Length: 524
Image (cartoon, rainbow, N blue to C red; front, side, top):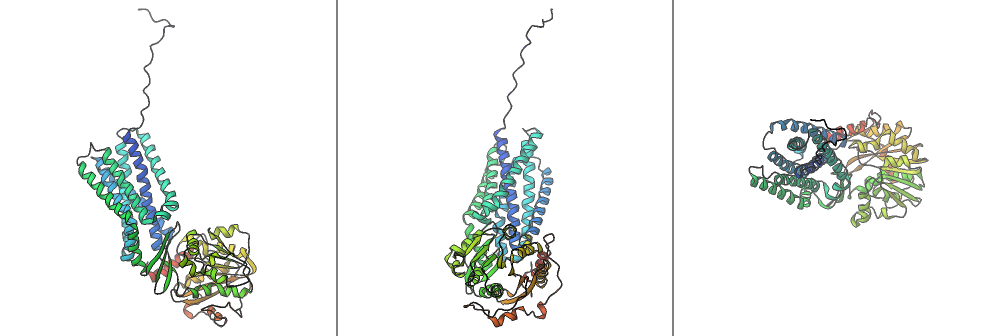
């Protein structure tokens, strides 16, 4: 047989098979990975937020919650090796368990904190551990189910991609959309519903493999029913928990990205709580705010430009506006929900005398630390009315770095005053603030007042010149007189100065000291 000539055409190659697209089951499972990751991270964030609300020190609480959750996920991943058969059925059951435990986590913890506060910490970490273990089981099971049809390298990349995308989505939505608009309880229930929908979806996808299809469908519908009922009745759950916790009738609630705002009304009038901590009581708030504002304002003589840092309720601004010499007041409050409520809600605006609607007042909703770094203005008086340093985000506002910025923004003859917790209950914390103010070169003048809702409460005035008691005070005050001012600076033996270190941004020793001292009183 003659060999083929060089010009003879070679037989054509068979056409290449078109690349196979993902099957409907693969797409559905990868979408489930996205939802599962989002739900898992949300439960973690919700637990961390609740822990910081109730236990304080947000850095410590988020660190321990995240550590516990990740450890539990590792345990769950290790346990997944023991699931060998009926993987779709196991996946459905685990999804339903995550939906129930994770979805009900915020509601359960709110109720426990109200009715059995001693069990809060144990239940918190128990539920985080359980949710983490179940979440650790989810992804390995999905990967093993997908492994039937997907090449390993594609499987890992696809699953991890959707896992990370789900985490990114919820990490942005949690503080910006979910908590402000839905609240923690309803947000948890919503994501529990998503987990339950994933389980129902999986039941439909694998309906031909499941041995007890009706039982799986029934379980999915029951879980969906429980979570949907909770979602619809979330307001009642919140009211049930908060009515027990706050005792008085709740007249207003709001949830912002920064805090839970609750206003109650009872025999002592209105009371404001932020994250469960009392900020003022209408019955005696005048004592606190007069002591905070007037020693510095009256001593200055004729302050024209005043800044109030914190104090979004407008009470300090109300006292500042008693001085006819004041031309402008800049109120720097991080949370716009606070200033909006105390400007627009009639019963709250009445408490501050409509101060936030004054044409002299400019409201700036931003972080006070950043504002001090950016502004070039100087002020005759600066009133610093932040919450106590219960966590590092607030603690930075009590550091030498913050007081150095405060010094730069203070006029040469100006005064600053800082609310500074109780020198009786938190003695070392109080004198830590005094020491920190002195460390930046300012003269510190500590004083205190008795406010029945809080007990003995401390303040520190700071300036470059000595303080001398003013001869007159504005008319209409209910607590202070010129004769009584001097007594505020007299400390009895049990509140006198003790050695204290400087509170620095790099160590925030004050937060730990404060937590230890107040922990002895609150039992946390």
